[in-house]
Each structure stands twice: as C-alpha cells, then as structure tokens.
Length: 215
Image 1 (tube, rainbow, N blue to C red):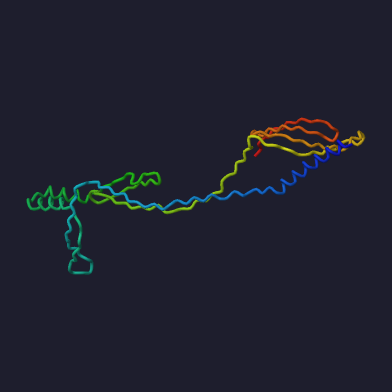
Image 2 (spheres, rainbow, N blue to C red):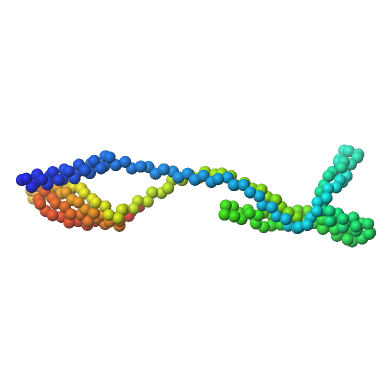
C-alpha cells in the first residue's frame, strides 16, 4: 500500500512540475529586423576627347518680332573655330564645308556610367557634333528596410522529458482498474524520444517515438 502511495506522490510531483513550467514559461515574440542604408553621393566624370580649349564668342541672333538682332554668348572649341576661319580665309570651301558638317553631326555615346558594389547605371547620350565629356552626379538616398525573420525551431542535442499518463479500460466486463503511469525520457536533436516509466500496477514500460515534420 505504501508503495502505491509513493508512486502516486511521484506522479503528482511530475504533474505539478509540468503545470508550473507551463504557467511560468513566457515565449518572447520575434522582433522585426530594421536595416537602415546610409545615403551615398558621388560624381562620375569622363573626358571623351582630350585637349579641348574652350573659347567664348558672341553671335547675333534674330528674334521674331524684333528688327534688330540680339547678341548671344556661346562657348566653342577654339581649334575648330581657328581651322574654320583659316579655311574661309584661304577660300577652301570644301574644307570649310566638311568642318561645318562635322561640327553639326549627330553623335551617340552609349555605355556604363557607374558600376560599383552599390549601383550600376547605363546611359546613352546623343549630341550634335562630338561628345567631348560628361559629368554625372548621383545620390543614393537613405532607405529603411524592415522584415520579420522566420523562426526555425531546432531540437537541442539532448532534452530531458517527463510526464504522466492515464489508462482507461475500454471494456467494463474486464474490471480493469484505472491506471496511472509516470515516465521520464530523453529526446535527441533528430526528435527521437526514448522513455521509461512505471505504472500504478508496478509495470515497467519502455517507449520510443519518432518526430515527423508535417508543416
């Protein structure tokens, strides 16, 4: 009788420990991860044709509705200007014509302007005449990225399990009493469980269970 009472005490202690752990365990929610990228600014400048000397001149431009022309300031390539004026002075109309047509020719540049670890920019430029150089300033604005990480549960290398079971008779004519079983066990990182228990009829039990992932 005392042994049965001792077994009930063990079972009640196991149940009490289980209830205490269940009530006191507080699962912390997963916080969102916030990533802030810093603002970055830069400049890409490239000289296509080197040795260009700028020269500022004034030209007369007629405006509709006005009888007298106005003067407009423009910047030209001094080398082309000198060659063109020399051809006119020498009455070399073919050279002057070719220089003029070359100065107004449509020219296209297409290529990669910026290519680094943060950004890649391809561009295309169409100009009237020669593309001499380009100067591109860029700014990558600061941005904030927020996401909730996915929680992946992994079993520890070894866990200690404990619990209790009630066994109810399914057929009343057998007059089987209600049995209580207390058990302890271990669980490995693969989710396999090995248990050993003792019921109220002094029967020793051994158990094995395997965890299957469903979702």
